Structure formats: C-alpha cells, structure tokens
Length: 208
Image (cartoon, rainbow, N blue to C red; front, side):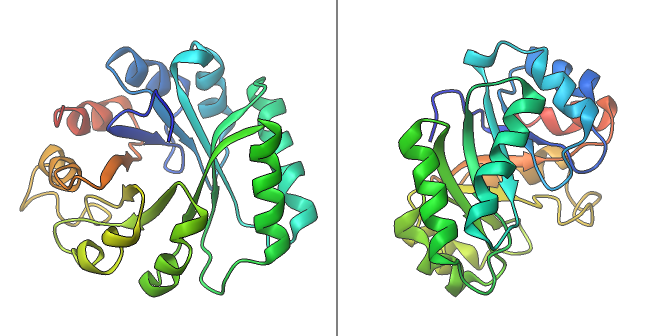
C-alpha cells in the first residue's frame, strides 16, 4: 500500500482527538484513518504531523461517481494536504457502481489518491472486489475467524478492524492480545483501533 503503514492504525470514529493522534505518532503509529466521522480534532492532529512520514486514509460512502472527487477534495482541503494515501470505498454490500470505481481510479491516475481499499460485511461480495483494490478492509478477530478462509486468500492485503469485537473480547483477553492476534496473520498489514482517549490508546499500543 504505502511505505508508512504502521501495524496499528488509529481511527477517528470514537472520539480520539489531536492529543491522541500526536501521542500515537510519537509512539510509532503512522497510519491514521479519518473514517466515517471526520472529526475536526482528529484532522487537526494529522495536520500537526510530518505529512511525508504518515499514511492518511479516508472513506466515502457515496454511490454516485460525480461525488467521489468532491469527497476526496474536501478531505484534502481540511487536512491541507495535496494527496490522500488510501481511499476506501466503504460498506459496498450491494456492489460498486462502475462510475464510482472509474472516479476512484481516475484520482489514482492523477496522483491525488495513492491506493484504493474497499470494505463490506458480505465476504463473498468483498472477494469479488479483490482484483480492483490494493487492500480489503474486513472484520477479523479471535471470535470471527471466517475471513481467514473466505477472504484472505483472494486479497492482496488486508486491513482488519473490530479486533476487540467492540470490546466484548476484553476481559477474556487483554486488548493488546486482541490486536496481536489479528496482526499474527501474514495477510493483515494493519489493524485499526479506535480509542476514545489516551489511556485506551496506551493499552492497545502494548501489542507492539
């Protein structure tokens, strides 16, 4: 995917802000997923980091090709960056409109986006996308291992999420062990975490 993709990625959806972003970077995290909720404070944290040393991913849910570029351009404007490292076409349960895929590839051709990823809960559907994307984003944890056989063989690379199964595995396992498990598979190049504060981030970072 990109040269600065850390094994643990920090996602924005659960309230992590600029202090958590900077703290994570100082401790070796270089992958930042400004995802479904493009929280201003998370974006402010990204802007404080050396752009050439980090990987920034965003996602879009649009099913209209003409809206793909504005979504990316809005993110670039807010982050004050010339490029986005990873564009994820998110939650593609019903297929991908050809114009959406064409628009995404056009952004890669222009150098505005450097790589493409796709996510879906339907594993068979996700596998059908494998040839058009640099990585597949999939749920994977110690309680949900079906992707190992159903998705991983077809993928060029995998970005995993919900390593703690929305927190339900914490107790039987330590949070750090949940991430260690997900990252133990050779196809998984990074695993997303979404701590709400610095204390949670420290617990997750112990896997490294």
